[in-house]
Length: 280
Length: 261
Ligand SMILES: Nc1ncnc2c1ncn2[C@@H]1O[C@H](COP(=O)(O)OP(=O)(O)O)[C@@H](O)[C@H]1O
Ligand SMILES: [Mg+2]
Image (cartoon, rainbow over all chains, first blue to last red):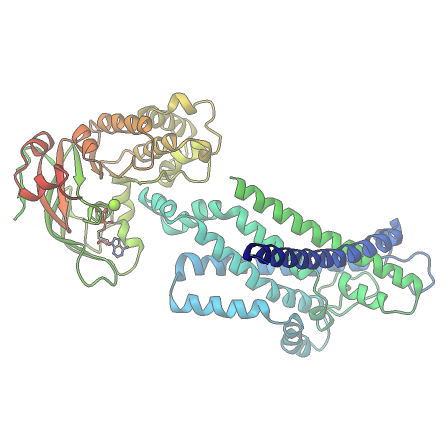
């Protein structure tokens, strides 16, 4: 066997193996999506959106409480986490730059990003739920915003740094003060990137269950008081799916489907933004 | 010692015993430099790469101050005042001394907003005044005809040469006294380059211009005075037509005859 023949065989073996692995990976993805779509669509009906949770056996049962709870918890978390993350990222890129403090914050933020979310949930349980004496939607939002913070902070930092420094210099050279350079020129240049970071951050926390089990807990009825426990899609899904009742399990599938589509949608929008940015 | 001719006209800027040291550098990048800059004339700065042309140019509007730790010594006189003191109001200095960069720096906003940017910074809000001055600046920068129908379009849709003229329009819209150009045509094609050169020559009626260029023909074509820099020093400053024909310094002669660079 010549050298070339040997190389061709090795080449083919490796190509076959890697293609096979890719196919196996894809197969699982489509299997999951397939099961989800089939069971999810089957479970969907108007009641899901118009009715709150009911005991097993009731016809008029839905996820309205969990959908609205989800919007409240994630909405408040976004409201707190996004400005904080963008401002912190702005500090890193525009003020701290390569300073020691900035580098330390970047390191801590990277560590936070890989911290298991259940640890963040336990932390918020200790500092918010315990002193308050009960579960609350506030605590859930705080936990989610803590998880969101490092993602938004780092994307903001990275995206602002991608704005060429000559653009900043050109604004300064026209007599602009620093805050106007940042708001009017740098943010504009990085707008798409920051928005993508925000979408990915929201998508990431929208699927969290563990930190909510410790904080916002659950409620089978519609509640819009942030001081009290509140239903979320993820925790509701967990409870319904693990229950022995068939109609509850169906609701669990519906919750899983809606949540997945929401997160998939956010990811697709983020990708479209990124693609548009690259084309430019 | 450097040969610096006596400029027989009013001066826009006067550099005196100037030294500049970058943060963390152990030696100054500009050493004991003296140089008059003529008013309403074009002064070209030439010299081999790394000789300090950009460094000197960026001292005139103190853009070096954006990065901590850079150090100026000596004086740069502008309207009889040393602009290197810590008391200097950098915002009003930069309104009077504008800058055009090597690569076009169109802001990510519309053509109109780009040109209006400096005026709005100065608090001009009146729509008619803004419209008039944007139009005038674009006309003066010889780009009005090309953009008048798409003032609201994104400035990044323009070609490189158009963007550079837009940046010139943006700079002259605030009516500066001095304009600093750092190799403004090095990223452009020959036709755009010729357009920018023509524009620079026209502008000298209203502003004093300093232009850094690595292209000696460009210096010869556009400038009234040429300064030759080498290793952070000004070797020779003379009238352009004299300096390219009869340089007084041996180094200048070697450089313009292409013996090094
Ligand atoms: N940001 C910087 N920090 C430290 N040294 C620099 C910096 N920029 C330029 N220099 C140095 O200063 C000298 C002059 O550079 P520059 O003014 O850019 O030259 P030119 O524009 O003539 O090519 C060079 O030796 C260069 O290495
Ligand atoms: Mg240079």
